[in-house]
Image 1 (spheres, helix red, strand yellow):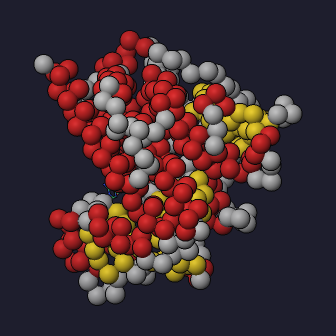
Image 2: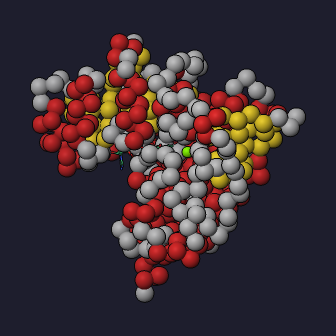
Length: 390
Ligand code: NAD
Ligand code: MG
């Protein structure tokens, strides 16, 4: 039996992961499931899958979790330290599907145990790519990407000589405002931004899709995972979301990965890797679809995308600063304190300020430095937003 843990079990990726695991209960022993505020779901899944332990990120909810698990034999714990401890429990396969920088430490701890880390939490690679890869290398852990584009690239590269890769194309749906008039974007609301044209995902990543901060994170993620130069990574808007990524090789050939938009494909690929096994996803009907279209993203509609290339050019810990500033700006947008187009401006100003304060971004790739710059970037984002309101 494979020992598996799911971090962020109550979210969109987590629930899709549990769906696959629950279909073959005889094949898996569930070690840890973790969640946030949705105690009822966490407890119900932990009971159903007979997990060793369930952990909520919120310490104030520990009693609720204990009550919900009473008599089940499933352990209960709460808080960031409990999350890190749960990641240290021996497991063969760990899903990293917490949203945001909070997913970093559990993922690193799982890699330190030598686990196979199915990585949906793109923030891990954006904030700490070299550290995550080094941790995996040192402890015999393995990272399998779950982001659909990166899973697609990973699959297209299987059996290929990586030196023959010329470029990688990440596709993007274009998000909720793809076809809106530009001038309307300033007044877009969080509810409007949280409506995705094709994928069904958590609220934060859906808003990040509308702004293309999600794609910006994915450009950096691709650079870290596949050791690409910035000019080898291209983004194309592909409204149908059926081609998840393309890899172009030095002989002019392009390998594309196609499928329906169901995250259980990428999750299942990571779960069964290195094998490819049957999955309960719909099959793509190209004749019914008729056509697949592509176009270049407009720079003024998606300023976040340009910031990704700036971050890559800057190097060092700029990715951690970028992600943290983005998370803070997103919090402010969701709370209606700043507008939709202000998010990229706030993040750009945080990067300006950190560039002007040498030392922080060029500190070595150690966890303490990453945590410090994450904190600093959040404070700078708050300062930038406070100044704007004056
Ligand atoms: P979600 O919001 O649906 O779920 C997030 C999970 O993280 C929940 O279980 C929540 O309880 C937990 N969580 C939130 N804040 C936490 C904190 N501070 N500490 C610990 N746990 C916390 O998000 P999602 O859409 O499932 O996305 C999860 C990750 O996967 C993100 O990094 C996202 O970018 C990535 N991803 C998601 C999709 C998708 O289709 N949903 C696709 C590609 C990548
Ligand atoms: Mg993606």
